[in-house]
Length: 309
Image 1 (cartoon, helix red, strand yellow):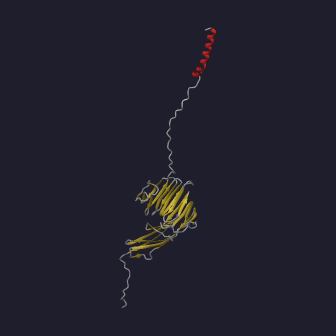
Image 2 (image 1 turned 180 degrees about the horizontal axis):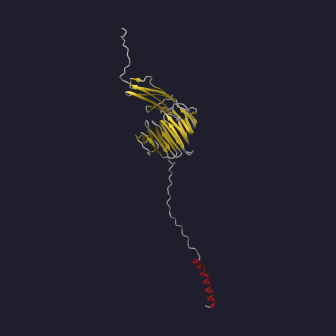
Image 3 (image 1 turned 90 degrees about the vertical axis):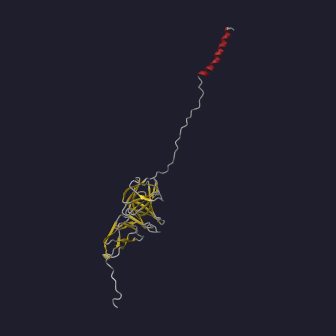
């Protein structure tokens, strides 16, 4: 082969190797699919609205709790936690304070029973079975506090303020507002009871027009006209402003829709003090006291029918 031919062959070989060299040296390596690592996704559980925690605060005397609608009554103490459907009751001469987080608190007067309804972040519902309770609501417009009365359609509701609600358990419900405003409904009517006012719902009736709380509480008690009697039983009768709480000899008694009450009192031989105390939803108290002596040796005078024969 001539030199010219060998040169041409070499040139063609070099030209053929250029694409191969470019493919080996300059081309990108084949793309690998990305490695996918599975990541665990936390399950999101909707726990719903936060529940208000309620517990017994200050306790004085005998206070009992009921866990659940069908539970029995057991003695309670400060710090006990309550849930929806539980109940609390105070005996004569006893007090209890219910505390709902930092949102509200309720002071229960003697002889009062309260049932726990809804306990949500947005609303609390309680049931006043009977007695008197003072509520201090600090919701600041973010929480609705509602109290219903047993054996009545009366409902008190507010988002902030201080009010007292009383129920005789037979349809008579009274409300007095100390601060803020309280919506008071019943009988298809709603009234707004403002600070310094009170209203009352009687059985089957709507709330009365709110009026200014009187400066004193009316209490009339019929005490014995004789200082000495010979029967160990005495009936104490009286009248008070309807919706008030009345204690006779330290015992809570029922006041009817007219404000009348009657209660038998047992006497012991000798002198017996008589004490009647009343408290209204406006915060005023009234007292009446007396004394009677029991002498069973004294017999009632009799007339001999044969005296003039």
